[in-house]
Length: 404
Ligand SMILES: NC(=O)c1ccc[n+]([C@@H]2O[C@H](COP(=O)([O-])OP(=O)(O)OC[C@H]3O[C@@H](n4cnc5c(N)ncnc54)[C@H](O)[C@@H]3O)[C@@H](O)[C@H]2O)c1
Image (cartoon, rainbow, N blue to C red; front, side, top):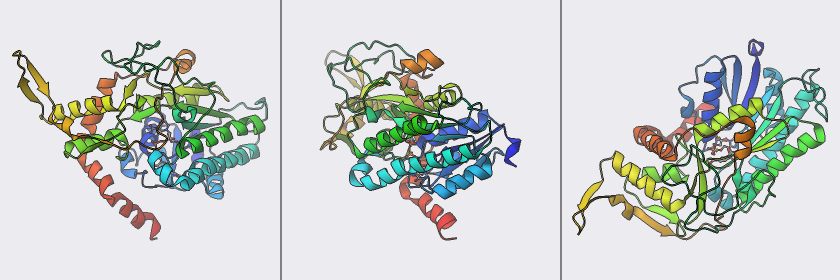
């Protein structure tokens, strides 16, 4: 009986990297909510990410494609859904360059299908579920929360290649590093200028979400977040891929000269922001989420090598000509420069001061702390890594779901 719960929330893409952290946070923190993880289980979705909570009474997994409008609508009706937190997407830029159709299908059409199902279901409900153009009858917290990326804003100029003191201070940045590579930052009012098929598809989905608010009064919120890192990320993305390669002493392919700058946020800090915004964010608002934590790719890679080499006891001590003893990292030799990604945006830097100011959110971790935790997690969970890299888990899903 879904009515034993005070809220019934669909989280899409809950088996993916960020999704599993959001599902875990909600299931553990809100036993009075029913959390329905709706996921198609593409190559990026992995139910092993949720082993620790899969038997909780307030958790349910539903294997479904967000593009299946009838399926989503029926699920909303059956479960009396009053909230959607939408993370499901195709998320890897390199894949979007090879196969843009899948990105348009999932990210644009899938989001539209969810919006249309939410509108149809919530409009069919008597007050207090009913919504109106001006939200005047909107007296329950039903809402459609869409998770997006900073990549929709396009690229920022790198006016200070050596780094300057940024205008912000926050816990997330390391005391040692805390640099910005330009004066401009992504703010919520910036015009969208996506460059990759991935960011173009995400931008389009953001526009649809806002259009459903403006046209139909659907209670929507959009957030745009910077690069996440942390446990359970599929190892096609830089940080888990490189940790695994360093461990196995495989080459570390760096695009161009590794000069591209990204802002990095620990994934659990993103999940905490999502929790806060879902509950306290203002309808129709956009919030940027980021760590004020800009790093050049090449510097991140060096930090990863140092952290992994230290953890695995590979650091060497050498004496310089002046008699000084210094630490050297043999795996620096694994760095290999490869042809740059087509249309590779130079710098992303999020200004998340609105979220800090209005809702009091701040990242909780210093970057070094987050990286150390992350490296330790991947090294301690080699079985997880081997499983996702061997494709065994996809075979398991085929057996579980497709051959029935
Ligand atoms: N990873 C980042 O650094 C980052 C940063 C900012 C925003 N985002 C956004 O956050 C969201 C989650 O990103 P992620 O890194 O966790 O992605 P991910 O690729 O790890 O996970 C995506 C999940 O969506 C599921 N999915 C894909 N297509 C689906 C479909 N048609 N129907 C149902 N489920 C489907 C997959 O099975 C997977 O579980 C995305 O919307 C992404 O654009 C990611």
